[in-house]
Length: 281
Ligand code: AMP
Ligand code: FE
Ligand code: FE
Ligand code: ZN
Image 1 (tube, rainbow, N blue to C red):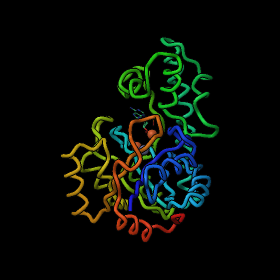
Image 2: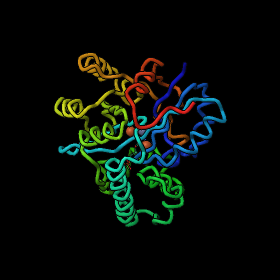
Image 3: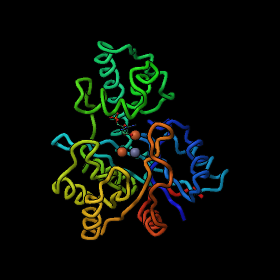
């Protein structure tokens, strides 16, 4: 069984529509794939329909952007939550709206130095999608400022850049509580990915565990090996599930579907623990 529990579509910053992610998952020889768009579940229905058509299991998911009190960015994966849960929906809507204002602000700053307009960015955002820096990167690529998204993220779009603007994001422990309240299974995404910025300390792990965290994403290309060892020990100590995933973004990132996998036992446990929605088979 080949199971990949972290993939993005153009409902957020992936480059393929949800049904396209399913087709790519079949091509990658996967038996099950999760769609985990940033702060949105809008892709679930079309992914589910495509999965039924192509005979692959589909795990409904989402990736919630969070920030700690110290300003450290945390991504929380949620599996099988109720997408209509009011509290969770309110929180992600707030983030999604804030992302839009923030992207506009970043474009205003960038337009002082680069040939970039808001229209250029919107051109790369699917209707209703969660807007992020990758869409700004796409517009910068189209304008010939950078070669690809990766170059944009290592130069003008880093979090240290003078053009970077923060957006509202819930505290990670709050997000864990909301996912649990919505019947979902919260898993800390790429927790030790130091290349992305500062990573959290023991205090945040403890707060998230106390709030009901159920798993950690161990096998992810951005987690260095030493950090993975730490995560395996943490999981053993606190009885957390361990997942492995690609974080596929279509052509937007080098990450390939199936490059890391989650065991069938862990997926079965996620299904047992979830009460908000079900795996589509
Ligand atoms: P944002 O959430 O708008 O601050 O943008 C961060 C998102 O950009 C992350 O969730 C990644 O999916 C994406 N990202 C980060 N680094 C890269 C990269 N090098 N190439 C493409 N996408 C990236
Ligand atoms: Fe992303
Ligand atoms: Fe992430
Ligand atoms: Zn992701």
